[in-house]
Length: 251
Image (cartoon, rainbow, N blue to C red; front, side, top):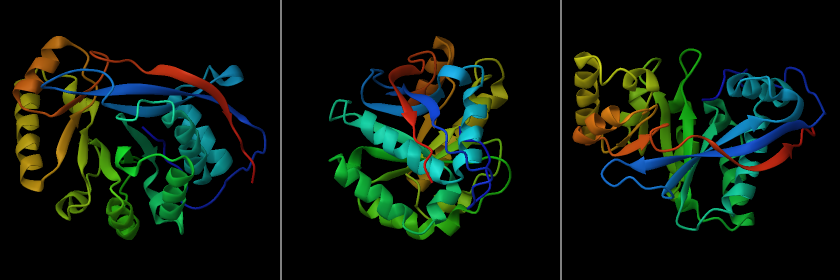
């Protein structure tokens, strides 16, 4: 999850390096769970910032760099992606407002070309948080990136503002169901009925569902029986640090 941040400005530009390292968490098919098909990159604090939660750390990154933080993280992910097996798809979180920035789509495509990473492996996760976000304002960038076989995911779907128009317009390949809708699926029938409705919704819109926060075998079995295609959570994979590094904070 990415924290709220002002749209196009750097609030407090800090030229000191931001100590960080990259983690991955696996996303598995429910019908055939195995590691290695798809991972999500997650930025984590190191050194003097280990006391901060991942969310607070990301907030700090945006305060220092504004939306340029997304580019910083994207380049770190490119560095890590070349170390993954060539068949592994990978997700990178992007602040929705970054998609509205001039040349952001070009930056993504040029970075993939520079690192010689197949764009078909990339899933950009657009995160909903902190109030309504008009993702349709990013339609041109989304369409350009999808025309190059980059997939788009709507992250944290459910508790906030769901941008149903983006899904209805066919601009999203994956919908990631927020953990708040998954954590009680084995305890409350209402949650199971809700997820069944979301599964029917995904079929009608041509999207694939990813259930986040799956933490036990009972939850997994219920979601598999609902034919939720993808599973993410501690039941199969915890975030694993893959390479320490330092994000540069140069203007």
